[in-house]
Length: 245
Ligand SMILES: [Zn+2]
Image (cartoon, rainbow, N blue to C red; front, side):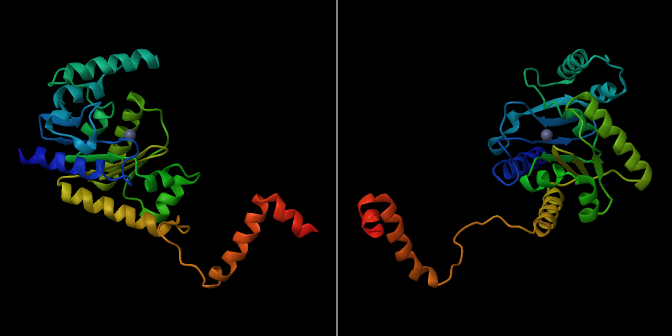
């Protein structure tokens, strides 16, 4: 199926780029009306094949968002885990814990990553204010919440508020101290959105980290032999003594 091949390609594309993925983090998905393909736990984005995705029944996932779970966090996460396993059609594959978030986003493809530049912003003290300054207001921003069902419900609530305000589905969801979800109906559009985000962030970073050879002044070549001589004296106590004499 072409849609799944596109999902595999975009997963590998971002999975093999260190700027986008920290230690294999992040996950991807594709959905149609009935089913959603989400990266299974244990598979790596960089080398993923169709086998690396869990397939889940969306009608069961939708029911999970309506359900009332235990107020005890440990008990609740256990119940959610069991329901997620029950909704999984590819038995034995454990879908990502972020599956419900993927399901609730109203586009065919979702790529969730923790890029260094994005997290530089999302972990900043004034993340929300800076986000607004750089990207305006057409996105969903979710203040830090522990991962799990509660985070999913908060994301869902924010998405609904966005839909009410803009009469369309959000394509960008920024999670404080965590990362970003980008959604679109084609993988080409996802790439375009990520490229635009990274470009904007790169421009915003005023202090660049050094990379490659730095240009240096020609006088360095005159000073260097002197420096070398002085350093060698420290290593050689004998010549140090002569000097002080
Ligand atoms: Zn994540």
